[in-house]
Image (cartoon, rainbow, N blue to C red):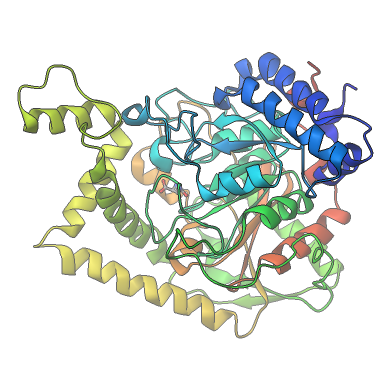
Length: 492
Ligand code: GLN
């Protein structure tokens, strides 16, 4: 079979359970595609063929014995921020270049327990700080839709791998947009769950009060399958929430678009830098939802201007604390011939961290320092609360809130945006993390250069089923999510 990579997760599950193909055949099919096509896309940091084939054989045995889950034998890729026992986990940083975790992240443990087959680890911005995946120490990943463009970030490897059909779906993490923005840039569906829905245990920490893992795939249905595996309380993560997990697949048709109230924030559609094609495609998608029975309601989100400054204080502050553990002593990169302990710390960190990570450590340390703590960090926390209240007030009147996922389509590789230009590109995604809310990206068309554009729907707490269901129904009525980049059409 040459077109296994064109099947949806549901079709893959059916094919495996009806023995139309084996997990080994499917896994070999993907490994062949990776070997042929990934040298152009560069989405994988580490490919694990031996382990993948062993897992595939175990899955085939389980399939024969009838001892299966819904996803037994289906391959996936993990962002290189999830700790994987025995396989290198770099978080895109030279400082972790030689790091092999002694344990699996809970998300990885869960995908293994579900019988999923790990193809490898995919590229990302260093420590998930960035919006292009260019800050990875192994170099840039290409956007499958235009190889001289970035796939977005920080989960750019996950997005590129799925968009080039080098994995049927992938895990990502989202601290300020890192699932939704690369999904938008690569024409995929990506869900950032409510803070606390998915365990953070074993995910290399960036900003712990904002980090959350989620699925990236072609469709809402495919995302729902992965959410069914990774969601849930975990005693090893004190911020994970003890709350029953929905059956996201069974709920895909449970939310009626008819009568749905979609909030359109006035402030969001007047943002300077919002690309005209992005605006038009997003508005067309909202019109489509209106045709399907939704009501569009103009709302106010008055704190919009505060999103970027608030996030870019809180996230670096938490990062500066989280990254203090990389000191060249216990694990990771260590400088050559240190003169003394201070030299060891200084040089290991200066040589091991890239420039964007160093910038954030400096900003964060400054914001947390005794003289500035109240003026910056405490103030940012207060504004964070106001941003959350702004959303809660809006949800009294609407069911979900619509926005673009990003103001532009994918940038060119090497565009060399200034830090502030890059930070402003996160305007639509940051507030969701500051408030801890769930949000989803859905592909809704292309710009004049044929680059994908995404619609973001933001839901109230624990509304993952609702978001997936709305996008699922939208995808039953449109075909943007089934369109493939030319490189994905290539056969291995
Ligand atoms: N671009 C944002 C940042 O650099 C968000 C990244 C993320 O979600 N990990 O912080």
